Length: 107
Image: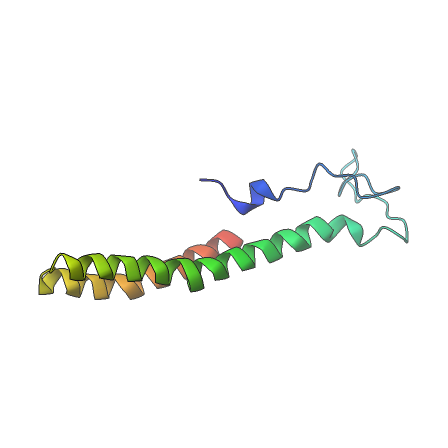
């Protein structure tokens, strides 16, 4: 599965003079110039925002559309009461698990 972190990986960009990477070859912190000290974390900032936006789109847009389509199909095939009950159990379980997976994936 393709993750947002692999699409938005900005580690290969050069962020300016004096800032080459987060760590030097000796393992210590890199030296920052006054002009570029915050530019190093710009990629991480936008990556975190992309994860939040992706999670919100998934929860607010994609899941309700999927639930609506699934409900529509079950109504059209005249699903039994047991199947409809399982559908109504499936809704909150899926929502809660998707939130938990997003939280675990962020950590």
